[in-house]
Length: 342
Ligand SMILES: [Zn+2]
Image 1 (cartoon, protein in one colour):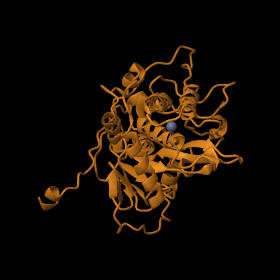
Image 2 (image 1 turned 135 degrees about the vertical axis):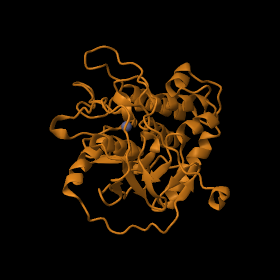
Image 3 (image 1 turned 180 degrees about the horizontal axis):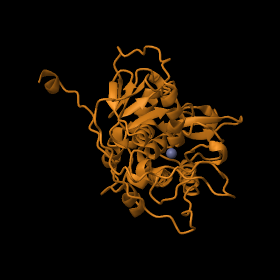
Image 4 (image 1 turned 45 degrees about the horizontal axis):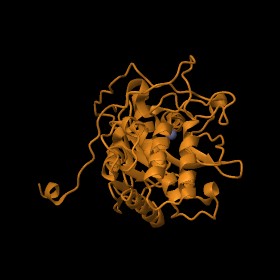
C-alpha cells in the first residue's frame, strides 16, 4: 500500500490538475459502521453486509489466547470483533478511486498539524527496481508483481489483481513524509482530514469479488469466500495501527527462497496484518457452527498460508510483537438529528 503513495509523491511535484468534477451530490451508502462511496456497486455492498451479518453468527466455543493477545481484545464475541474493525475502518472507496494530488487528495496548506514521532519512520523495504506487491493470504494462488503496492493476489494470467488496500494509512505516511496534513475527498462524504492511520479509508479491489481467485465453482456466498473477504478486512484494518517505526504495519520483502521472494508480502512481526488474518481465519474455522469439515479445512489452510508470511528480522533474530498503538487521532463525525439541530 505504502508504495502506492510513494508513486503519488512525484504527482505532488508535477501538480496534477486533471481531476474532473466528481459527483459529490450523492450521499454515501451505509454499510453497518462503514460509509461507502455511492460508486461502490450495490451488489458489493450487499455481499459485504451479508458477510458482516454472518460474522455475527459465529460462536465463541474455541477462542485461542493468541487471537486475544494479537487483537488485544478481552474476548472474541462477534460484538468485540466488530468493534475492533469499527475503530479501524470508517470509509470504503470503490475500485475506480485513483488518488490525484490537488484533485481528490489535497493538502491543508494553512492548517498547522504536528505529526508525532517525526524522527521515527517505518522502514520501506523496496524490491529490486522499486516494483513489488502485497498479497493477502489466498489459498492456492501465487501473488504476482504489481507496482501500485496494494494488497493483491494473482489470477491465472500474468497480471496481479488488487484485493483491497488501506489508502488512509498510505496517505497519512505520505503526509507525514512531506510534513503536510492531507485531506481525501470521499464521494458522498466530503473532504476528510487524514490525521491518523486510524482514518480507516479502505479501497475495494477487483480481487475481493473476482472469480479469478477461487474459480467460478465456489459461489460468492460460500463460507470460504466470506472468510476470505472478512479476513482481508481484518488484514487491512491492522494497517490502520502502529506509530513511529510500526506505523501502518508495513510489509517486508519476502526472503530468497520464499515462494513470494522479493515481494512485499511478508511481515517482520508476530501481530501484523498476516498474523491478524491467520488468527481470525482460524477462529472462524473453529467457531463456525454451520461449516462442513471440508470448509473448516479450507479456512484453516487460508490461515496457515498467511502464517508462512511471518519472517525473521533482517539480522536473523526472531520477529516479535510490534506496538500497535496508533499514531495521531481520528474521530469520525457522527451524524445525528441532535447534532444537526445544534
Ligand atoms: Zn497488507
